[in-house]
Image (cartoon, rainbow over all chains, first blue to last red; front, side, top):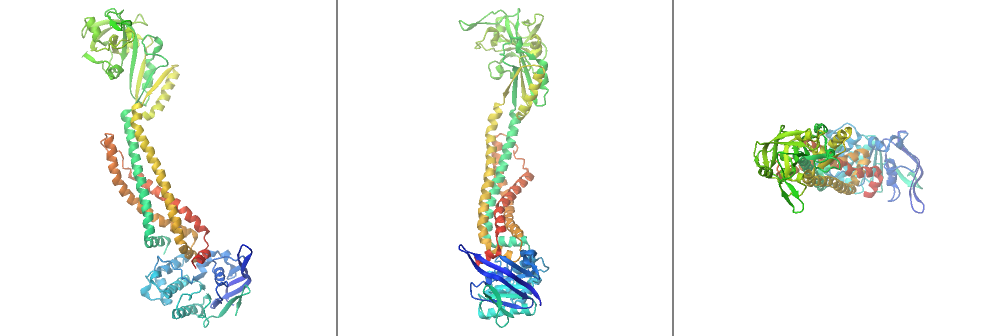
Length: 221
Length: 418
């Protein structure tokens, strides 16, 4: 078993005035390298919250999240995000004052890993982005092109975990399928652990495990 | 793509924000540098005025009126000389008033009933031993003036005398004539004086006869000192090199007086300096007030601008945090984005302020009738000041965003923008 990420007895809830809304309750699940996981469910089911916890954007109320048997809070949330994780957002979340290639360079620079413009170019090419678009700012790129840049940015640090929150949410079918193919390659060719939250069915053919939130716990369906 | 490059690209991209910050910082920079230069000019002018006008201190025995009649009016000439040796003193002059008698010549006596002078009196005269006749108050204020011959030279010794025109005429004397006077206090003291000059005398003096200007005989100081019987003088005046050293001088002079057991009164005369420098001192204080106000207002406006910017930048901060960037580096980037326009503003501000100040400099110098510029163009100091204030403003404006960034969680930001 090539376990890389694990939820262990995780509780998460949102407090309200009266009581609280439980999202996860004593949830345990593990993720392996070289696999593609899709977390499916309707809006509001807790997919984004789960991804936030896995992506160290938030901390569980109870329990631990382990990266290679080490609690990510022990590793350091920012360090874990910088060194081991690539996050792809539904809204791409590119820095609009930087060009496509510069957005990738930012991530490389933050990670402290070696690599300059050449590496960034190569990554963008891998995602299928045309070279003529490298120097364009995000506002001059289409949704699909921006998502490719976001994926290039996510993998630029050599992270072994890629988390994507609704990566095809704003895309047309053709573009969406292109993005799906990229994630497929990342998991099955490059050996990353890819976790995708989605309520669409584009990932059905490529996903190794479909996971859902059932009774506040993660279950494979 | 380091922090500095990100800051530069962000500044270039968000031109309006950049130009707004640049404008605020440029205005603040110009105000600060112009205020500094004006303050420096005013301070320079005060120093020049100080040394030009100077200040003086008059010393005499405490509680005594200068009559020449009372031995206790005198204080030792040696003590006066010791005080004149103090480093603060530029120049000193002395007066000794003694009453004398003459049998060779007669003066005028003052008739109180008819309010007029009559010749002859009993031969009473006031001998004014003086080291600087032209500075004596009667001559300075025009009450007395020279009619014939010459005035006594400063620090003249010997037995020369300047008598009044009235005495010359009524006694039928002329220049180079001799006459004898003797001291009231010491019967053995007498002197044969030679008339070298004739002063006008002023009949409007209503004092007793020995105090009428017509009965004044001016002689070199040493004659009167000898006649005092105690080797004393009545009054000393000390011109100081720098009025700012007045207090220092007074402390030392009083110490000399105390050492000799003398009860002396010290009267400051720095009114001219105070009048001349008051306006400039007010200008200096105004410039100081401008400094503080400009820094405070600029800091407030910049801080508000940065807070406003932070709301726009929230998304960007969230993205950077989600990429694993440290809060510290994000804060540094924000600070750099303020520092870049600050550095530009300081340099442009220096250029603009130097144009403004050269005009002001000429105006102040012309107003003070000084040929050379007052500001010494202390470029190094101005550079340090401008950059120091610029950095201070940047630091103040950065405090709030730095604190705010520490509280941001990337999840909350992502949720806000989702």
